[in-house]
Length: 268
Image (cartoon, rainbow, N blue to C red; front, side, top):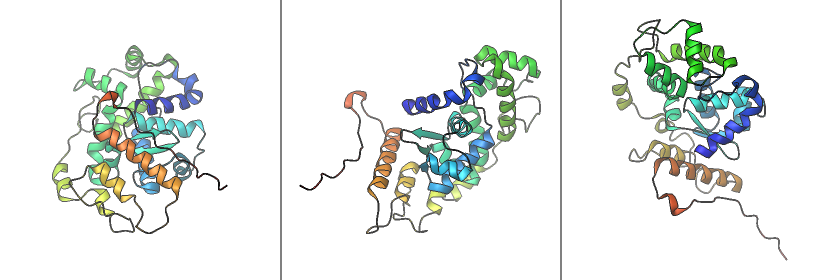
């Protein structure tokens, strides 16, 4: 997925170059709640994936606008989505967990620390009071945050930390939030993808022996003997291939799978 992430980063340069000020460490310009909102919008539109134009419409945003691209990049920083070639937006495993309200606390806890800058601050000040804002911004600059955006980076981090529960135990320091009995609740309740089965999908996807991403992939299949446009089949196969890459291993020199649409030859 590195090339995919690079594509999104390139698309965002025009919108945020003047604000990034040559930052060398990853951090979002939108907070964690905004990223979770985007995940739920994807889930509302397509379950586990949708086209970026569909997502922009669901959010009431312009698909080619800088604000929308920054929202996409922010959700990527929290490791909740992947942006594929062709404009397909796909939930990561963590993003798929986020659509189930029972997982909300643990997902937010984990997503916060998937951000490179936030993990660095957490590691250096875990359990200790955070420095005052001006000092914290200077420290962030030392981590690689650009001079012109240090204030923005700090504010978004503080909001995201609060949203993730890192200030629940103490308001002046980052402390991992307690997750009470969530594992028991998850074990007693089927995943969100299984709850959706039987509601018009073509495949029940209820085999718990399958990886959650495979279950979600099967759920998106139309019913047999119904119309399924070729371009939609292509998108499904591309999504399936990206999921296989994410959950299976293989030798680096084996090559790659090229999925493309071949037009029918014209009749003579």
